[in-house]
Amino acid sequence: MSNSQQPDRAAGTQAPATPSSTGPLSGEAFTSPAFLGNRDGSRWSDPKSLTDQDWRRELTSEEFRVLRQAGTERAYTGEYWDMHTEGVYECRACGTELFTSREKFDSHCGWPSFWAPAAEGKVRYLHDRTFGMDRVEVRCATCDSHLGHVFEGEGYGTPTDQRYCINSISLRLVKADDSE
Ligand SMILES: [Zn+2]
Image 1: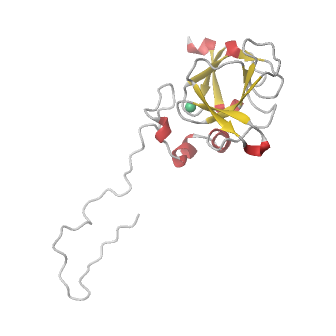
Image 2: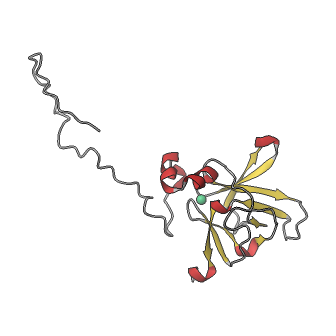
Image 3: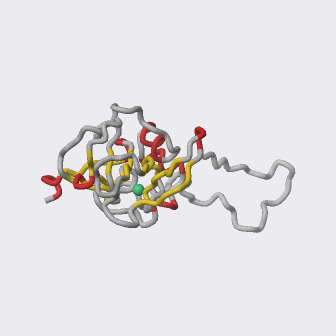
């Protein structure tokens, strides 16, 4: 920001009577939004108010592509598709607990799969008709980030016969040992 001070006397006119706006402004002293530096544990007061620009600061470009632009990580490349460690899977964007290892099962589809979220209301659902398919998108109910899709009636031997097919990169595993 350039706040150049102009004499404004070239034409012999008097300086305006209104108070000058070129006082001792601290132009660049923009304080960081409260959510910054607040990633470990505590939640943001309202993650839904964050702009794309905010999220780009918070997330890696790949996290942003999946979480905020509804991208999909390539099958069998994510961190958690073959993970069997006990713990809680948090939203990587906002830290809300979304899934647990208790509902995780081996679907062999290349993405971490759960037969239910950690609790009702943790996720929200949207109809997704992109790519000529009729799918149900799963998003974090707290920050509205994209997580993956849920499929039903595929014949997996789980209590719900649902498969929450979630991108590893949308999640962060907090191992049971660590949280004690
Ligand atoms: Zn979230």
